[in-house]
Length: 378
Ligand SMILES: *Cc1c(COP(=O)(O)O)cnc(C)c1O
Image (cartoon, rainbow, N blue to C red; front, side, top):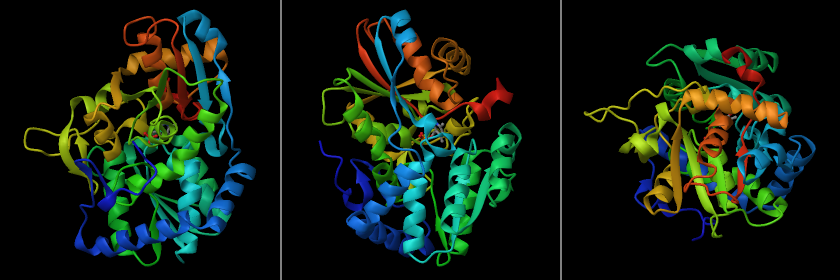
């Protein structure tokens, strides 16, 4: 299987596509064309690679989790996106899209954010590249992720509270897309994950590919299992691309309250056909997770496809397991990870030594972010 190419019409098997209001079709087409050209342009790639190295702190290390490995009877390596600038993998995607926006002559970035990590990364890139940033964030997330709201403010971004619906990521995404419709020529909509209309799922996966490429090079051998948490699915997609052409098993871990792969059905959300949590009438349901970054009823279409063809497995963990996982990793390895990332850790803790993850397995786990933002929630 190749994940190198741009998917025709943005389709991953039965999923993906571009389901947007007519007014956004030309903007999506222009964006796809611009990214296609930039991604094939050595100067663009060199500039991005340079920023990732000297600004974002790449490559991030691959850390052997020796204590936890010994306790669990497996060999566990952690890909340390928590050590990237601004504290998560979001910066990889944001720097790429912000450079692209500048190349397209845009002066403003519009973004949605859940836990605030994507908003902080976007505000950061805007400050660096001299762009304005407008960040949409649900009121409920503003309450529970206050530190990140302060960071965005410090960076000079405008944070717009969203009070509709569940007042979380789904609603913030709706508002951000609306704001883009109102300013398609001046603003770039900087989507934070592998969802949305074509070209976003492809573009964001390409920009996160660096995680998997580095991890593959850094790992002392090919892991048996590659695992990452899944909200929209960008850190998992970036990780999986490094291993999809190997025999390694791919596992994505969702929040039990936002498990689009496990409990969802085919539907359209935010411009893409994918797996979506919905009620009997097909209305998109609210997700509910302790991790604001996973509080999302959909999943990127490529994950829906990888699940449908059996190339990747999706599992769920509960909020209680996640909180226990944050503590266990902190006390055994001295690493305080984000609640989102702890979903992947929680699955490893539960599965190690069972048929799902037999003793002796080697496991590569992407730790998507650091946990400072969550201290108030624990
Ligand atoms: C945003 C976020 C996630 C969820 O997003 P994905 O697109 O699924 O990667 C996971 N972990 C952290 C730390 C985040 O900030």
